[in-house]
Length: 316
Length: 314
Image (cartoon, rainbow over the protein chains, first blue to last red):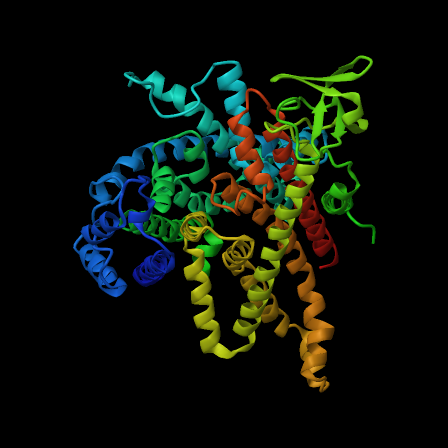
């Protein structure tokens, strides 16, 4: 067990190196640079050249890469071209909003997904199951940005119940104001996630129902709710643990689409802005964080799985 | 064996959508380039009169009045009066899905946009299938070193934050349709490679394949007779779901303004355009979204149905 963790952690470094190197190559291979994205027609070509030199973009790519890498090893992620401040500060500022939004959405996703799946699995192919299946299938096919648009139209523009964007109203920073802004984006993300969770959990619940220990439990005359909530749910929750681990990256790197639509100042919006502005240090910094999150998330999923499932633990 | 109902419904939906996008724009009466003066932002179901003038202009309006020698075309932004003898043809039609800011009929535009969304998703999956099956086969049959190297590559690529990668490439290269197909395909073959490798490895140890080998069957025959039929099911199921994923991915990129250029509107960019005038014309973003949902759900049903068949026979 410990050997597995150490081996996986040792793989972290080459994997992350691979991801950031590939990212750097992609950014370098693209035509143009940060200097070309500044939207100011009065900038002369000479000035743009000066800006390129100012940000060290005129140096050979390999030199840029090595100096960036050297700085990263000492914990320095460089300075963002776009925000004109250290990348680490931009990222640490964007992380809490993303954690808040993605965390709320994940909670909603799990609670709602679990409730829907239980309602469906109580009586397979009954009316509750049919409604849940339809609902989760519908939500699965809907693009999240489209749902966000509908939510903004209905709840914000027509009904005026919730604000359509940003995290705070101007001049307000109370908790209520924050929750008020959080509602729509969290609901969007959570609903789309819940559809997937419910679909997945329903099928594992149905698999478990067909198992021998369920038959044995039913033969012992246990009440229905106990069968479903205790004997079927526990083994069926195993894959959900994997889902949880796999959603760690979204928790950290944020949903680009939802954050962009709702102007939520998180990691996804930062990554989007960085990509559009060719802000190399920020792109690399955001990719670095996301890659680490993906790898650790996978590892966490496998570890959690071993913790909750004795069969896996013994097999290793 | 009876086909699962999901498979039937899903295939039906997919066929209907594909046919509508392919032949719909040909069958529908062409409403011209639109009439921004008289027909902008008309709600779904509006009856309009289409007037083609002798000088080549086309006027579209829900309200037309006439007297002995003049015809008046009314619209939100004013009225145009045309002498009757300048009207080359006149017909009535219905804007089933409404019209956009430029007075263009949404329905044919939606169907044409669907051609682009469908083409990109299908071609992207073709690329993914090609690379994924190739890599999976190479890993399963190419010896231990090749297997280890290729599977580490798959792991590493799966560690890549996918949407950020797509967004990055799209933002940096402003891709045309061909490049978009390439990057969508190249970013989604890893799962397929894993499936192919796993299937081949597990099939290899099954008795019917070993029996064939012992009986001296030529390798090519073992592949066509035993491996490929057993690979088909899992691949088809994954492919169906993957096409849906790519439809959503392309729509997302187009929505973010990073997809294919605006002169080729796909469903994603139509939603983005429509959301800018949401209060004046909800239908402009709602219908493309429903189209995407119908397509992705059809594909998901096909995937589910194929899975049921696979479980039934295996």
